Amino acid sequence: MKLDPELQECLRDEVAAFLDRLGESPARNLYTPLAPAVAAGEVPDDLLDPLGRVLELSLGSGRLRKMHGPTAEAAAARLFWRTPRGATVKRTFDEVNKALIGLQGQTIRSIDLTPRIPGAYAVTVETDRCRVRLSIDESGAQCQGVEVGF
Figure 1: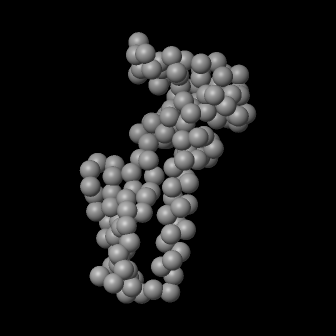
Figure 2 (figure 1 turned 60 degrees about the horizontal axis):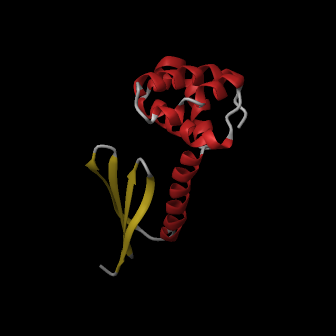
């Protein structure tokens, strides 16, 4: 994947910071090849998963925005959605959105959002015909169940 030159500098910093945090961990071997790939401006397919993990951590922690600003954050987010990790998360939301289309035309009685544990939430949508339970966490969104005639 070819990198935007403006994002390339930001990614060099983020990958370096990530590698520093890993120290001498064996996991470092998975991420070390990212540094020269980012410096060259092109990340090969076999490094897109590690790139996605670096982006997920940098974006999720707010570090990328703090260090490089909102424009770099937006560009990095667009890149994240193109990585295998980002595409997987996006797919879960697309699937839940397709399932929610079935609620069209129904009268919504309540929508409840509840924290389960840090970073994980439950959403319950109750209509005049059914109750839909969803979960949202770092892995994406999933439909946990549909109750009809409750």
